Amino acid sequence: MDAVSITCIRRQRTKKISGNKKRYNQFSQHLQDIFNCKVYKITIDAGFSCPNRDGKLSKKGCIFCDTGGSFSRAHSSLLPVEKQIEASILRLKNRFKAQKFLSYFQAFSNTYGPVEKLKELYDRSLSHPDVVGISIGTRPDCVDEQKLDLIASYRKDYLVWIEYGLQSVHNKTLNLINRGHGFEEFEKAVKLTQERGVKICAHVIIGLPGETGKEVLHTAKTLADMGIDGVKLHLLCVLKDTELENRYKNDEISLLSPEEYVETVCDFLELLPPATTIHRIAGNGLKKILVAPDWLGEKFKVLNMIDRELEKRDSRQGKYFVQTNSLPGKYV
Ligand code: SF4
Image 1 (cartoon, rainbow, N blue to C red):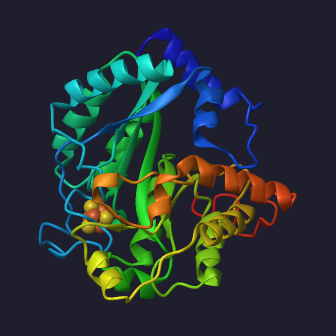
Image 2 (cartoon, rainbow, N blue to C red):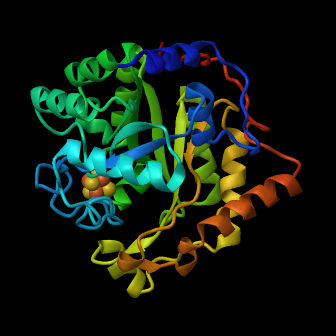
């Protein structure tokens, strides 16, 4: 790692002033504040599988997941990790004037393998001098102490995040969407991860079948109470060749309107601590595999609607966050 990057990591511990102009704590701005430059994530597909797909737990997968592992493999050519990184860096530098990068293991469950294999892949992803951190997406039931020790070992030189697919804290919903794990596995993974000082981002889906608005907000309160560092919010969308597509076509599920989504997102943000980083709040969805809703493609319109709604409420992330006795660091 070069001297500039090490300085960047040190700055992470001291810098307090953010240039954030949003009413929520955008992850991209958070990275800019730490590294003092534009930092982009590079999506990597390292060829992992998932126990909810390969038959260990199930062959069906989560009901919303396509065979590409929730669409992340759909645009991957499975080149060697270094080639994926080089190609993305070139593209992101030219297009967005990005300067530094995080290697982002996104497709499927990126801790689902022997620890030696994980180390080799993570090391290779960090070998480019412009890569200043790593983010690893996985299931909470695919980590153990040895794997988390490995991931935590990168903290001395890099920014390190682990992203757990959770979707909801309610076991009845997790069963309904065939996650193959419960909230208890997430709690256990969070405890082990927080003990090692690795930052955690939780993925949450808004609009899951059978969930009321109140239940979604209970997920927000629970994550706030657990001291989760970051959140990625997704709208429930229907992708081709998924169980959800069958249910949608049989009129068994309904999808949120943009107004309902925006309303729920704003309610959710109000309950999170102001410091929680928001890694995603609106997605675009891959057109070629998206069945519904159509409006998912209008990412900037949705982002503007969220800004306007927070403004209208004269509100912001954390407005209704209540620090409970279990904080700070319930699990530390
Ligand atoms: S855990 Fe992830 S990759 Fe596995 S089936 Fe569910 S969404 Fe797909």
